[in-house]
Amino acid sequence: MVGGTGCLVADPDLEIEKLTVVAATYLRASAWRLVLAGVLEDPTVRPAYVHAVGVTWVVCRLQVDLAVVRRRLGHRHEGQPVDLAWRLLRSGELDAILRSVHAEDFTIDATDLTPFQTATAAVRAAGWNEDPRCSSQVAYPRCPTDPSRAGSLARHLSRRTATPRTGRAASWWSTTRPGSHRCLMPDRTDGLRWLAAGRHWRMPVDEEHVLAGGNVADAVVRVGQTVRKPRTAATPAVTALLHHLTSVGFEASPRHLGLDDIGRQVLEFVPGVNAYSQPPLTVPELTRLGGLIRRLHDATQTLTPSPAARWDVAIPADRDELVCHHDLAPWNLIRDGHRWVFIDWDGAGPGSRLWDLGYAAHGFIPLQPGGDPDHDGPRLRALADGYGLDQTQRRDLPALTAAHTRGMYDLLRNGHRTGTQPWARLWAQGHGAHWGPAADYIHNNLHRWTTALGA
Image (cartoon, rainbow, N blue to C red; front, top):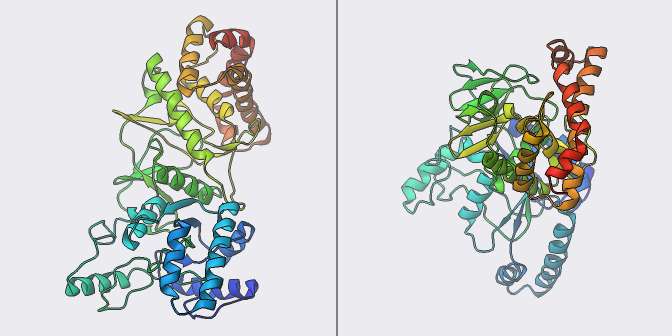
């Protein structure tokens, strides 16, 4: 169904055409979110739907135990044996299809959840509960039992949420009429997938404070408890990555909160001290850092990026096995007591575990020109031990650390030759004088690092 018309559209082109019109109507009406309920059985069609809607997508699978689904179907279609038989057969087929295509950004197991609990879990996983205009006391309250309170809530929310419908699943968050006693929640959780086309909320611009540091990104400012930075071509992919990290409970990434009135990214402001301004990490801290990077990689291992994802990886990795940060360095680590958070994810993208860890080794050991392998070797081992490298990985890490460091030098040098920014500017500021000799230092002592790592 498209737009709640109740008309099943068999022609995909016609469906997309109708969806384009419906989505544009809601967006012109200043909708904050578009939530599409349906079934995505072929992930290759996702880019076409994203283009039709015109905003970044987050795809969630509502998963319910198949036995529970079939029990619900039996109650719902009692007295309709032919229809029930087809739906029971289809439920098994659909469950198998959705498991095999794995087109979702995250999954909510709704088997034992109420509709409201399902809605809340999905909202939080998608990072949508951060809209300051919809506080937790207003946008996601418990379902009121007092009809007068329910009507008031419905009137409040109906002015703020517009939801087109598509596919064969019931609508997610359909608009609520004034006086209705329905809460803002899904009216079915039968294992079908809902497709959430995220209309980023627009945070008004307030007093801004320019944040110091940063060599690559354009102006980055703080507004209240948020950070604003320019949107890039990679922003949709990075947004999905940060939402995924939040959904799986990874604690060392900022939450992505949408876009502001002038189109900038809005991220959680993380209080604390930049590690670059502090003495190098101690050996126990390097072990902790290694464990933190391991948890990051384990978390991104479960992310399946959209086929349409665009990344901005500055230095191609040795291979692509998962999504990496690509700039794990002291200047991108904020420490606030127990919480450590990596910032500046705009350069994230496909890479490998050791490629990412090797770059971190350069900055955090640190592996600098004129260094002492007898001092740096045990520190490198602490990082590797914290990560939990096996023997093969320990043998491979030194060479990849040297290669990534050399890659940074080559990027700066080529930027200088071609005038490509910001690399040409950084070369002119003398950064190449560090990265070249640092790569030489790492390469010239490969055997010392291998010995220190116990490989």
